[in-house]
Image (cartoon, rainbow, N blue to C red; front, side):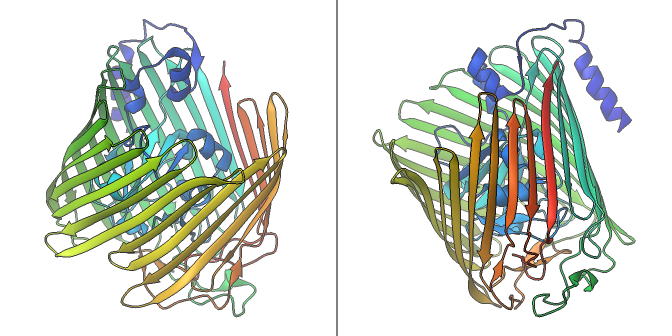
Length: 589
C-alpha cells in the first residue's frame, strides 16, 4: 500500500511547482458548460454517447437526491427495474435488468471490466456512491456493442473527475437501523493548469438487525488527471476495497406465517464470515478531435488483485489487461468499436473457469440516421478464451420532441456450450396530458425465461410531485414458474426559494405473492428454489424529507412505519420501523 501511495505522489510531484489558482468548479460536466472543457476529458469512463437512446442513465445529481448508502440501493430506487433487496444494507443487493439476473450482468467502472474471485458478479460495496459521476445501464444492442465482455445487460460506473484550482472538499454521512453508520471525505485540487489530483476515503459498517448481518467496509480512491494538450488526457486511478462481513443468505423459514420476532430465526449461513481485500489500478488515455464529427479514442491499461477469506479457506486471483475503444462520426453515420485482451489467474477452478486464462474480445457498433427522426443501429462482437461467445443485435429508434420509440433484438451464442441467450425489448417515452410516461416491455430467454412490463410516470404540478411505477414479471425455468408484481408510488410537497428546496413526502408499495429467486451466498447468484411468500406484501409505508441548500443536501426518512416484514428476494425480510439520515455537503474554500 505504501509503495502505491509513494508512486502516486511522485507521479504528481512534477507539476507541484507550477501550482496556479484559476476558476473553480467541482465536476467535469459543469466545467464543460462554463469553460468549454474539451470532450477529451468528458469521454473518459463513458460507454454511451450523448446521442444514444439509453434505457436508463443516472447522473450525479440524481444519485445525490437518492442519497443511498451503497450502489445496490441507488440502482433499486433510481431505475425502473425489479429490485432484488436482501433485507439489510451491506448485502449483495441489485436489480433484475429486463429479466437478466446480476450473475449474468457485466459490470464496468470507467469502461474497465470488474470481476471477483468467486462468481464474477459485483458487490454493491465495492465503489462509494460519492465518486460516481454517472451510471449507464446498457441492454441489448448497446450492451453487445459497448461492454468489454459478452452480455445482454450490464452497467458502467463513470468515476468523477475534478477541476478545482482552490481546495475542493466534500463530506457525506449516513445512518440507519442496526447501528448502521457510513461516512466519507473527498478532497481535490489542481496542482497546475494541466494537472489535478483527488482522494476519497469512505467507511460504512453496522452491527446488523438480524442475526449474522454485521459488516465493516472501507473504500479508498486516488486519482491523478493530466491534460497533455487540447486533445489528449491521462487519468490514473487506484481503488482499495476491504470488507469484513457476515453474508446471512436469508432466513431458514418464511417469517410471514408467524414468529413476530424474526430476529431470533436462524439465518441460512451460520459460519460464513468473509474477509475481502481488493486492489484496482488503471491508467487511461483519452484522445478527442474536439468536434461532433470527429474521432474519440479511449485506451485503458488496468490490473487487479483480489483475495477472499471464508472460514479457514483463502481464494486469491488477479487479472490485468488492455482495452481500447474508438468512436467516429461523419454526418449521418456513427461507428464505434473496441477490443480487449486480458489475462486472469485464479487459485481454484471456480464456476467452470480455468485456473488461468487469456481472454480476448472485439466489438463494433454502427448507427445510421435514416431520417431526422429515424435511427438504425447494429452491433456485433466475438469473445475468445475461456468462453467463446458470438453476439449480435439490431435496434431501430424513432425520436422527436414529443415521443421516443425503440425496438431492440439481440442474442449471444456460446460456441462451446452451444447455448443461446436472447433479449427482445421495446421502449416508449411519451406524454399524456402533460404527464411523462415510460414503458418497457421485454422477453428474455436464457438460463431462464422472463417476460415483463415496466411502467413509470412522474409529474410535478406547482408545489406537488407525484410518481409511480408498475413492474410485472413472469419467470420460468426448470424448477419454478410464476408471476409477480411490484407497484410503488410517491407523493411529495415541494417548497422552493431562490437558494433552497424542501421536499416532504410519503412512499409505499405492494409486492405480489410470488417472490423473486433465492440468493445463494456461496455462488453469488440467484437460485430457483420453490419458495414463495404466503401472501401479498406491502412495503410498510415510508415518510421522508429532503432539503437542498446551496451545495448541501440532507435526507431524513422513517421507513416501513407499519412494521411490514416485506422482501423481494425469498426469505430476506426488510428492516421494520427504521429511521435513516443522510447528509452530503460540498465545500470550496
